Length: 306
Image (cartoon, rainbow, N blue to C red; front, side, top):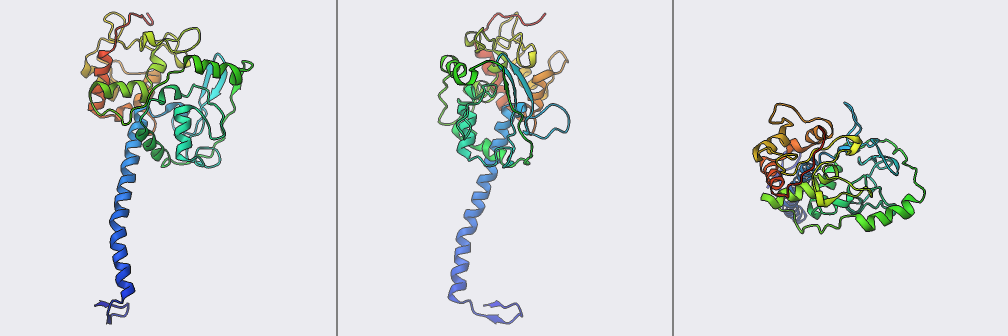
């Protein structure tokens, strides 16, 4: 028996019993779906931080909206501006499907088929596990939408996008095979975070005349990296590379503090701090895995700077 709204008891009819049964069945499933969705978003935020917070998509300066684009990048082909990847439906990626966002991230193609300039590192993001990419997409959809038009690129090389870029990609683009699932610990985890997610080689590896990364000198430093900054050699070369201990590397990635008391600056400071999240949000286990991997790669003698 149960009371009516006026307090008088009445018997539950068959339809009420059916409805109660349906609610009992739906309730736990809905809660499980909500918990699963929250876990995916949290995982996506974590992986987003492991990329350095996709800082290229946020303009420099305090108070700039996260992922709203507009950051300028100059190259031998001209000038491009990072795009709005907030969930705004008019100017961002709010109207894209999950698969379209993943295709752009991994293969460098917009939904309309337009090819992205590989300032966006899809040539290495293609090594990310599908589950991690889906989680990042789930997280991106939770960020505040920002209605901000993208700035058009200015390409100065004739036939660059129709002829030279496809030829360059065919000749020099890495062809990674993404793992079925992301490694979870040790050196394999560190390699995955450094090579695919963190895309460290895009800044820390020298480039040749073709502007392709010279993977024969992987992570050996770049005298003229992004925004013309010197990027250090982080191979374990005793004279010109990274001579810190595993613990010192892990601590640096979490705090930005160097063993000599100096702090990370320039682009490295940005990726440690991140935007919505950054390297500082990585677990000690993951920061240690990165450090262990860096200690395991071939040492390359390549002096950067004075």
